Amino acid sequence: MRSDFDFAPYYRATVGFDRVFDMLDSMASQPSGSGYPPYNIEKTGDDAWRIVMAVAGFAEAELNVTQKEDELLVTGKGQPNRDDRTEYLYRGIGGRDFERRFQLADHVRVTGARLVNGLLSIDLQRELPEEKKARSIRIEAEGAPRTITQQ
Image (cartoon, rainbow, N blue to C red; front, side, top):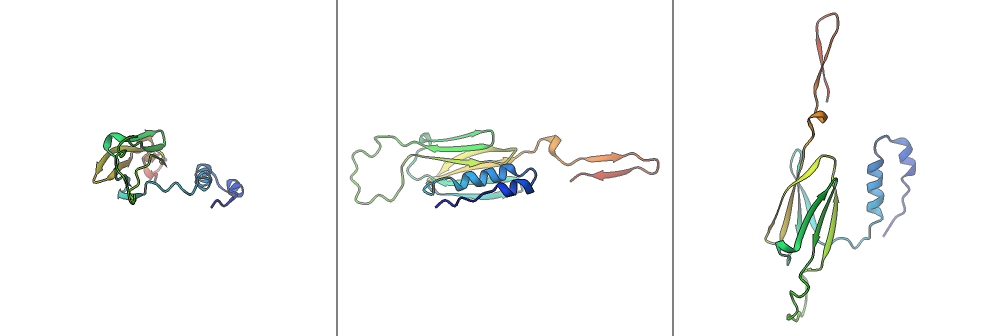
């Protein structure tokens, strides 16, 4: 179900949040059937996260994790003939091909990925460049020197 919500009035009242509204708009326009494969996002530290995806039935060679700028792409392409001789009475384990995209914040990069017991874990870490970190600036005055700390 898509609700056509207009974010235009918020663009006028905010500065620097254009990207947030663009992301919300793009999420609202995605089809609702994009829930496969299921995943969790865990916070593992102050600037660290883990995405855990349930990819039962996929081998390591059938999965691909790619980061390009601020987007993480996880794809699964199954072997076309892997179950050609099996007759299923009920098939509840999803094994269809998939493509899942995650929008990453600035300065977040993938530090590792592993497949254990049908769960693909992707570790993420925010690494701020030195010029983006807080620094102390000395104020020069005629009296005693004072320091202002940027936060």
